[in-house]
Amino acid sequence: DSGVTQTPKHLITATGQRVTLRCSPRSGDLSVYWYQQSLDQGLQFLIQYYNGEERAKGNILERFSAQQFPDLHSELNLSSLELGDSALYFCASRLGNSPLHFGNGTRLTVT
Amino acid sequence: AQTVTQSQPEMSVQEAETVTLSCTYDTSESDYYLFWYKQPPSRQMILVIRQEAYKQQNATENRFSVNFQKAAKSFSLKISDSQLGDAAMYFCAYRKPTQGGSEKLVFGKGTKLTVNP
View 1 (cartoon, rainbow over the protein chains, first blue to last red):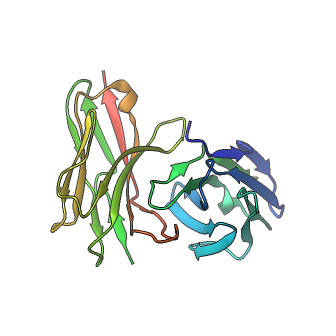
View 2: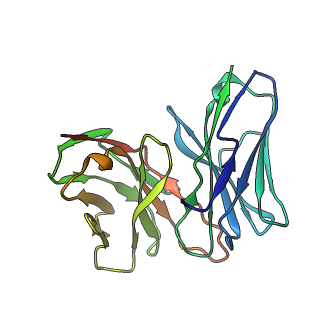
View 3: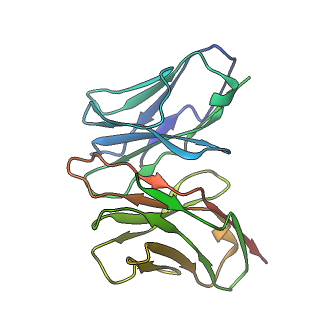
C-alpha cells in the first residue's frame, strides 16, 4: 500500500459529461501530481500542486482542471468528456526529494 | 526537454533466469534521479529502484540492480532469479532534483516483461 488513495476506482460516463477524480496524498506529502496513462500516449504528466499552489503544467487540456485543498487532498476535474479521454488517471505524491508514490489509479471509460 | 527511451517494447525470460531491461535518457543536467517502476496487471505503479546521478555506485534492491552509465546516459535494470511475480510493465523514469517539490517524473514508454515457467 503506497498510502496514496484515489477514488473512485472505476468511472463510466458518457461523452459531454463532467467528472471529478479525488486523491488523498500520503500523510505529510506536500506535492501532488496527476498523470494520465493511455495505450497510445503512455504516462503523461498533467499537472502538479505543491502545498495548495499549482507548480507545473504538462499536457493538460483546457477542459481539465485541478486543485489542491488546504488539507492537501486534490481533485482533477474533467469536463466535456470525449471518447479519447478514456484512460487510467494516476495521482502521486511525495515530499522533497523522495520518490513518487502512486495511488492505484482511476479507470475512466467514456462511452 | 528531457526524454526517456526504452527500446524494448517486450521482453521475456525463463523463471529463475536473469534479464536486463534497457533505458536511455537525454538531459543536459549533471544532477538528477533515475527510477524504475513496475506496473503489474493490477495496474498499481510500484517503485522498484532509484539511482542518484551523483552516486557512482549502482543501486541494488534484492534481486534488482541497475547498470548506471552516466556518460552514455544509460540506465538498465537487471532482474536476477526471475520469478513469475516479476511479470509486469516496467517503466524507466527521470527527474531533476527539486527544491520545494516542483519537478515532475518523465517516463519512458515501458517494457512488457513476460516470465515463462
